Amino acid sequence: MTDKSPELDRIDLKILRCLQEDGRISNLKLAESVSLSPTAVLARVQRLTKEGYILGYEARLNPLKLGAGMLVFVEVLLDKTTPHVFDEFKAAVQVRAEIMECHMVAGGFDYLLKTRMADMNAYRAFAGTVLWQLPGVRETRTYAVMEEVKSTTHLPLG
Image 1: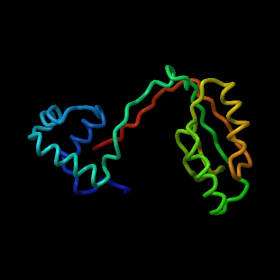
Image 2 (image 1 turned 135 degrees about the horizontal axis):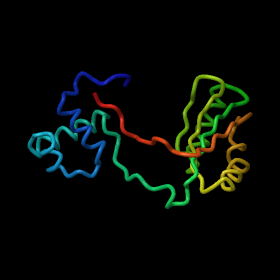
Image 3 (image 1 turned 135 degrees about the vertical axis):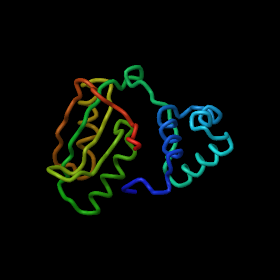
Image 4 (image 1 turned 90 degrees about the vertical axis):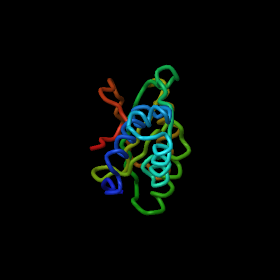
């Protein structure tokens, strides 16, 4: 999906904004926020979920309190860019909890990873035992985050 579907009206967008702000909002409070009946809002939320606009709900956890306070981005360059190597690499990163995101990118390298670790010692161990052992990895560049200036999952909605 590249653009908003023309099927979304202003009430759908308002529902999505409210849910994006507070995924635990009650149906009654959501209905009040968008000036619809609870039954109508529930039907719209179910439709938005069925159509793939709402992917799910989750709690945002504090990484500092859970021993994953160090955020590290890693550029990965593969030794070959064949479908087989890409598939092996993608499968290998799926099973690593430390790798929060993996994006194939255009440019001077093949993938950008977002990882979380306890500290630099943990990252060094991860790099040696996991990262550099991933299928096809030829070269990596590491960027340890010194300060998270902005971090959000909220999408701009009109």
